[in-house]
Structures are given as structure tokens and as C-alpha cells.
Image (spheres, rainbow, N blue to C red):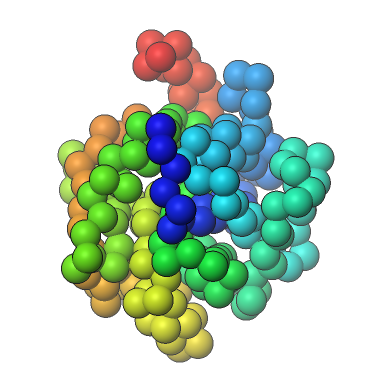
Length: 200
């Protein structure tokens, strides 16, 4: 598929994986780790990739090319908002695609749906599943308009991404739950593994 030249992808791998019990970015689904899977998917839509990591965390040098810029969280223990802010600061394109590392059902087609939904009025494009849940950790953000708002939220300690969305003009895109199914526990991963052959 054609790759837009105004897009940078940010892989969010700075979480603590507390519920998983170990680093879930390294957990395998099939022949790849979850982080490698998401990296391969975003490469289908852009060659520009950044990796968000904890300041004291794994840089995944054995999993992803060393040339990918590693962005430590600018504020420790601030959750994915800190990673998003790091990506907004580092991006040299007008759009940032922020993607969590724990989405083993993600496909290039999912991302293509988001890219096609961009408009001049929206400063974020966010998928929504049939249960009404919005998914800010697989979403597009317009860098010039979102960065100052995200920076202000981080400085104020308002860390919830859903609170950030309330400040943005958001275009929602209905998507199937499978592509956005995130993995929080080993049981989640086992269930995904059982269902995965049926979904492919």
C-alpha cells in the first residue's frame, strides 16, 4: 500500500506490565514477539518509526533495529501520556501514529482505515469498537495541534489519555474488536492464541 510521507509511527513499549508479570513486549505470538509484530505492521504504512521506552527500561536492541530512535519517558511513572509526549516532541512529520506494543491482532488494513479517515478538521483519529470504547493507544494525532495540549496535561499531572481526547476534535472510526484486542495478562495471551488461527 502507498506510504504517506507525513506520518511517523510511535511504538509504545514503556509500560510496566504489572498484570502480565513479565515484559509483555517480549511475549511471543507465533514466531514473533508482540513488539516485533506491531513494528512489522506499522512498517507497512510508514518507514518512520520511533520507540517509546521507560527511562530505566529495556531498549529492545535485540528485537528491533538499532537505528530506530529510542525515546525515554520525559516524566517517570506517567503512563502512556509520557510516551505520547516524547513521540510528539520527536516527530518531524505532521501526523503521529501511536500504537501500543500489545496488539497482536493489529493489521496494516486496520491502520489504513485510520489513515483514510483523516480530515483537515480532526486533530485525532481514534478507533472505536462496537462496545463504544475508544482506543487512544492505536490512534493518529496531528502533531502541531495536539502537542501543546498533551504537554499541558503532562505538566498538570492529568495523565489519562481519555481526558486528552476530550480536549481534541476526534474523528472516530468503527473497527472490529479483534484488531484492537490488547493483552494484559498471560490468560489474555493464551485466549488470543486459541482464537488466533480462527481469525486468520
